[in-house]
Length: 155
Length: 270
Image (cartoon, rainbow over all chains, first blue to last red; front, top):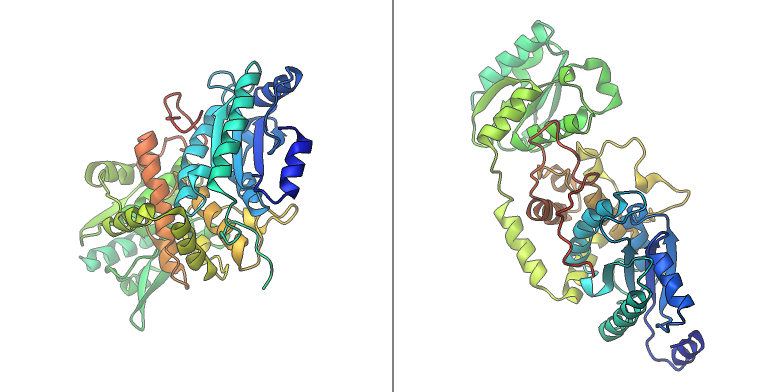
């Protein structure tokens, strides 16, 4: 789907998931770049935020994304062993494991939190990944606006 | 428990200068409140029973008490684990702290240094199970639908007044500047409502991932009765099951978050 198409369906009132992707500079961002230069089409529902390394991704980033209106969050970086900084992705993996279960336990269920390894050579994998999770989030529906993680209007 | 031996040991430590302060419990109109004893003659004030649930290790890092080191602390096993963990995080030197060890079932372990405390923990308290009531409650909540869980926690967090008593009660919350007080940029809304309460409670629990010894002091300190221990035990259980680590037994251990293993599970990563 192109961005123009995405916009037209959105204005027609159909639910279009908003997915925030935190990706690392060295692997997944380059992979996403390759998707583009390879002219591969993928769902326009993802907003990419580039960081130096997945090890830089604080749980607060993920909470902030949900707070501000994301329907799902994707975190993606280098495959194990490929980290530009040697071990950032291993550190991140531990954190995600714990955070994912904690968020699931408190009401941000794991249908809205995705993790992946996408290397700079995996343009096709990135396109497939985004298409797949967009489909999954579309199925799960919008993130409940009354969820405690979501920014509430003042009452 | 033999409170007399506890009093004698406390008095002896203060009298011969091995400790400049003993932190224990005293009675105040039926309540158990912390006692900060600097004079051997006051050691008779000390009491100990099952109502003494506060984690006194939380005082160790208070700047006001720094000049009273070495400090002797009355500690049950969960508190001993906090102290070993503080040593592992390089927050306390071996020479700065002594333990007056008490068990959860009325046994007195005497005066211990940190090495002896770790040895005792490994010998006698290597298996400290999670509170079975909490585990049962966690299973119940995990079995709910995501919507029900979200409703449950909305109700719990809505009561939070952001007094930060949970933080003050915890020996591991020793940061001099807490993330919640950082306001440029402001990561966590400080308004006592909605998403700020959610973010605060999640981040508080997460910052204690792999550092919580399940002493229960945070939940006991909460004036609003928010079941904080549910969050702590969910994390502690994951740390144990996923990484095979029980914290607070080894003063040389690397922090759980901050270290890694190539064997960490990743079945949730695609």
